[in-house]
Image (cartoon, rainbow over all chains, first blue to last red; front, side):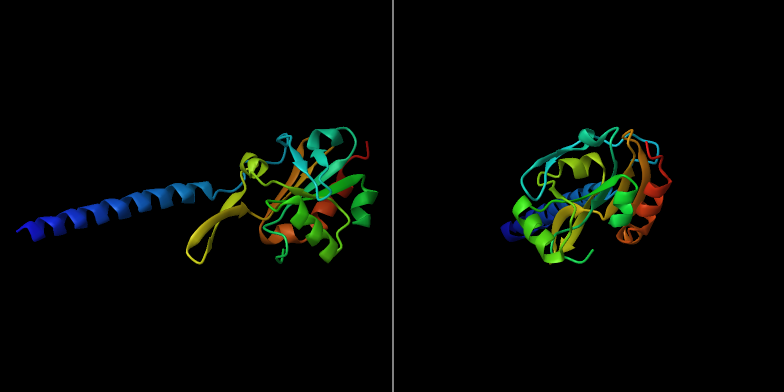
Amino acid sequence: MRHARLKTMLFAAALAGSLAAGAMRAQQDVKVNHTSLKVGDMAPDFTLLDNQWKQIHLSDYRGKKNVVLAFYVLAFTEG
Amino acid sequence: MAKLEATDSVVFGISIDSPAANNAFAQKIGVTFPLLSDMNRKVLKEYGILKMYNVQKEEYDWAQRTTFVVDKKGMIQSVEEEASAINPNNAVAVCTKLPKK
């Protein structure tokens, strides 16, 4: 009898766990979205370190140069 | 690259790698343009191109391969995603059409 109740509780816990995992997965899927930026939008400014540890501000190029931003997946990988 | 420089444009590669890793990568593949580190994924989030990758059942978020062309006013002139972002010719074509001043 006690065994049966334990089994039910374990089952309920497992079910809750898988539901939570499902919800988390759904949330992550939402994050895998395409950029919402479109042609004609202003490019958000940023400050990042380059490979010489120098700060690069996108806004420094305003009025001076066109900027091609090529986002790549990871260094040492194809593409 | 020379074609792009002729259009008064600069190129930045951006990923989540560290400056040290990017420098080694730059030397290995011989790129002449800066590689920028978005280690805290701030810019990726702002540009909305963070993508989940499943590696051996663990999920990691890295950049989705995307190329933006930003003109001198700071306005986006072109957005290319995934496969078409690999070929730089389109970005070159866009830059060539942009006004010189």
